[in-house]
Length: 307
Image 1 (cartoon, rainbow, N blue to C red):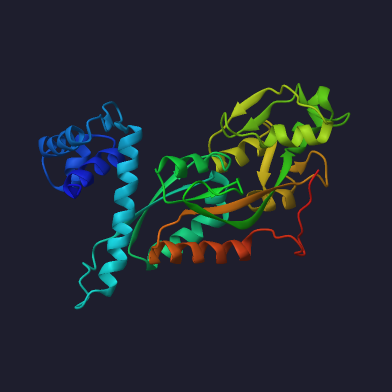
Image 2 (image 1 turned 90 degrees about the horizontal axis):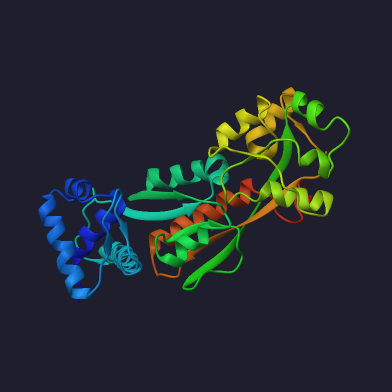
């Protein structure tokens, strides 16, 4: 059997990034946290923490943290079945999730907020590109993720959420300056584009569909959905924007499409660890219901349009 006090110390160091902050969270001394982690490392025969600023888990350390998340889910469900309502009503369960920034900035944040307001949970949300959130599941860092991959990670289930619609837009002045003669490969190779980060491939995907080949484009990196919109409105560059974030700017003319009728619809999937947890099932049901109301679905009145 594992020493769960030591596992809790390990998880606290990973989540807080340092032994000192972990100690504050656990209401013990940093020395006690260090001793517990060291004892667990001696028992496992390998390092579990990469000491640094911040501290990070080794592969084995991450697996142990994932195991602890599963145990806490099962304990949470067990307490509901014990006589005398044994659960501490002030205790909240940590739920680590990985989501893409555009979902979080549009339809997902209200859904998570509503769920967290009524459920005894503390959400620990990691943000990554939808094509990379599944890696968080594979590593055991999270229990569920919004992913662009329909194929479930090992030990997980995958359910389609719907699609987010993106439009390639820029300010009218930017379009007049760079695309006055049309949106072709030569113009795209000269006009500054906006990308969220190095993993953001939406602009490149849209361009390949439009001109039938890749184009080496100058890029501004703007790692914030809200700042991404502001940058486009102010003429910094063009980029793929979620319709939900720019609808008002399209109506008032601050943004215009580069090529009307060339929306890019990105399918999204909810992947969750295959663990018999009532609260994780409740979260999943809540997310699926919200996605059903807010995202695009095949056959709907707003059916997807692709290049």
